[in-house]
Amino acid sequence: MHSSSELSVSDMPIAYTIPNAANVAGLGRTTIYELIGAGKIEARKAGGRTLVMAASLRDYIAGLPPAQIAAPKAKAA
Image 1: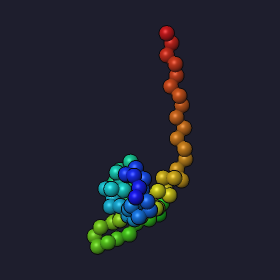
Image 2: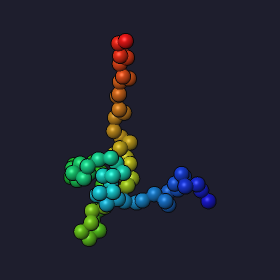
Image 3: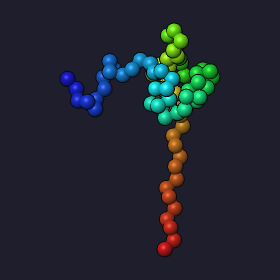
Image 4: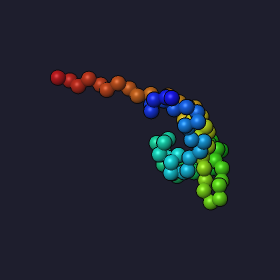
């Protein structure tokens, strides 16, 4: 048995609906559709529902460049 903070492979989703993919990735629905259209993430159709492949979404996000965030400047006293 594993703690609630640990996820095994069998606990991870295989695919997300568009709204769920947008939510877990922190992106908008339109962006998810654009990424699918550009071939940057994989999706499948199940009837009328579009499913975003979870591994593809993880790979896309992992391949993004690191954020370059500057430290805040010190305020003059």
